Image (cartoon, rainbow, N blue to C red; front, side):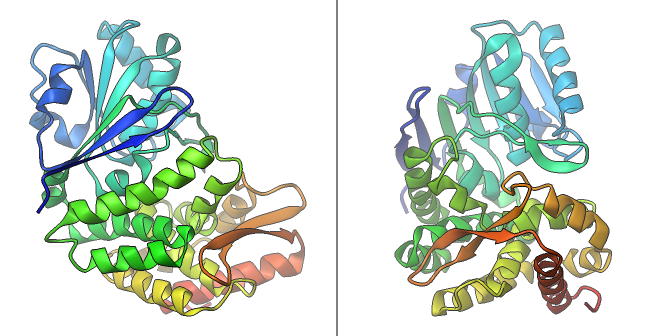
Length: 354
């Protein structure tokens, strides 16, 4: 098994490297001036004399109020311009580190060490932050990529089956969006994931690299990676964040596949089967879906930042592989179809009857 791979990502703010392997965080710690870390992992980071700032990895912390608390803590810890930040954690830590390091004293250089599969396989590259505002998921954010990403696959041994499934949901989403070859390349590597996670991570990150390099600021091709997210983000709100983001995306992909305008192909059938297999590992799913709040789902769905005032914009599977963005006029019938399809998918996964 390989022990170390490296990818380079082109960015308008400066290229950055992704180092993937079983190595430790020692080099990253040695070059950092301050560490921002998931509070659950704070005891595992031997940072010496440098400041360590624990972050609760919850959606409540991924807010403007949470960012304000963090910025105040950075100031009290003596963080100054020119200091180098190391962020250690999953997607929530990444989001707050991206946002805070961009705005604190007009910008800090930072390194990211992802500790969840979702962050390793997806969010670590691309430089985006997403912050919740007013109860709405990912309403504001920015672009501020790290200078380096260090992926220590040893962190995978700390994750339960539900967390692994959540990360794989984002990984298969990326691969499906790129087309049939990338999707089947994912499936062929997924079967050996437990023995060789690096091979799948390299495949998925190399696939995502195409999207973030051709469309760094999310204006055209990269928008395809919102596949499953319009439904998924609204679902997270509708069940009060009782399932993980990755699980919600897997459900969201099933909803997108089920939409009348989605192409029905052998690939979409294979994707649906795979998503259901991943969701079978999420033990909390049926109870969470049984508490589905349709009014909250509608509020969150209609507030999605991709929509316009008169069009729903959905990412749906297309003939020939991959996905495309489809604009649907906002009508009562369009909303009825969306809600009915969503309820049907939730019921098939153990939620209440539609």
